[in-house]
Image 1 (cartoon, helix red, strand yellow):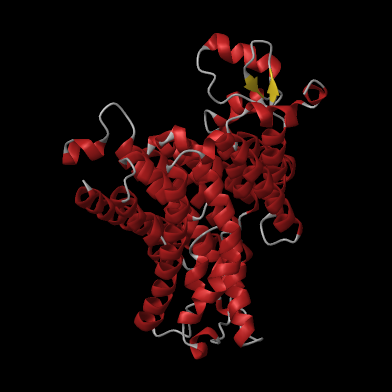
Image 2: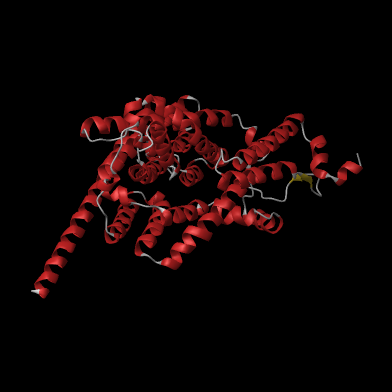
Length: 409
Length: 50
């Protein structure tokens, strides 16, 4: 046994209770699975690869400290008072990232700045009603998952946080769950990111609901009107101020997205390079790695995690169905040569769902080029998800949340 | 409570629809202003040439 104390990661397995030791083994195995699926590009490697490595490292790297307590040298999310935080900042190597960028939602905002700087809003501005109509339809999961989650026993704020998975926007889920259900933000965010990867594989099957002849409809992207850079810049500035006025609680998200967008449209090259390169990929890397390091065994021992896993699937399925229904309704109402697959792109998750829509169209008709059209609802989906995030945070956070003021309790 | 949450969800959906409509209107408004601006600029340029 003494020799085992040399290798504390293994030694602590013998000190743990069987349930905890089993949980550690399971999480290490899941970490390996994430790494493998990222390597094979089934899951998004930008986030899931560092997450998987963080996950297996934190569950393997458990050690015994002087007072006989077990812990790791990664981070301690439970550090509450200033003295504790100062202590762990000096000990745990990821604690500065967690304390200064996770606990206040900064990491989500940094990712959003980068996303803003790479987002193309031409189609959104050329076809705003089509884009936003489809985006609203594709929020069906974000809306209906709230009562479903409450029926399954979650608190209103927790239900709202998991419902945001239906918006298919990782940073938004992270920000929303930090604001509304801090205790569950790690499993909710991980569920969101894992399922967003699965979306890519699952939505093509869902798309088969649409009749083959409609999936094969060709759309002429040359008919899309040109939008001037001035109009795009004005849109970023005016919409940012409008949405910040409506939802100050989600203003950091709006400001981050639209500042990236405004910089892109203003053509400030140095900033564009910084936001779309080092900032976006640096923050995405640390987001994944720190999330992985937060996935300790205590996370899966929480009985709510199983409910979250089910609700994540429900949210994304309903959103996908909403998007498809939106596409079919839009086609019926406008009578335009419109491919309803564009509706799937409105589930957001820029640009994954737009690529999925294009992939599904190409499978039935090689000439069907719908990607340019799909980017409009895709970007509009980010805006509608941000709006719902604002509504939910306003509804469920604060001294007396609006939800309780309306319905009592 | 579940029924209340369903009602709240629909309120949230209605708010989202209205705001999305406002955003779409803002976009159309901007397009209109930009279009007018470019038209008047083109008219001014042709006057100068004349």
